[in-house]
Amino acid sequence: MLNATLETIYMSLVSLVISFSIAMIIGSLTSETRPGGLIPHKLLNFVLNRLIDIFRSIPFILLVVFLFPFTRILIGTAIGTTAMIVPLTICAIPFEARLIEEILSEVPNSIIEAAKIDGASNLKILIRIKWASKVPYLVNAIGITLINIIGYSAMAGVVGGGGLGNYAIVYGFQRFNWEVIAQSVIIIVLIVCTIQIINNLLVRFLLRRILCLKH
Image (cartoon, rainbow, N blue to C red):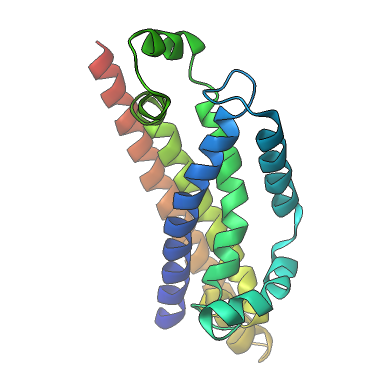
């Protein structure tokens, strides 16, 4: 049980770090290539939006199976805890990218125009104004994504992904031990609730900090 819990945390955190790093780039590009963005580009914006929509629409279990060959090339095996990081990461990227796009699109145009008048470059506006002003909301997006990844990691147990999902299936379902299944569910719920509480507290703290700096 302890090893399964640690495997779930390991898969989820590694997938979160990798996926969010990539999603920040994709989400920012999607936001800034739309009409009214920093670098409007209809074709690139269309392609990015369609890619996000396509990958978001694929059920996770099917994505895991579809990525078996790619995962085997990348990791050396298609099953196991480390191998599941690949589909978990790819599954999380479009979800995060869409959240980031929506968050960045909420920055008022008046602030952007004022920064341009002051001679700020597009990169400086993106990082120091858009990203910086939306830190609490980006942190909230990280928390939401982590909770989703944990849910997907449990489903990964169906195809030998390790973690609590695999533990519940191998030691619970296949042996008709409903106590093990219940324990796995309770631990996942506790992990999710803990993440949500910490995330809420951190977001509130950051929002208060921003309000204090404005005043």
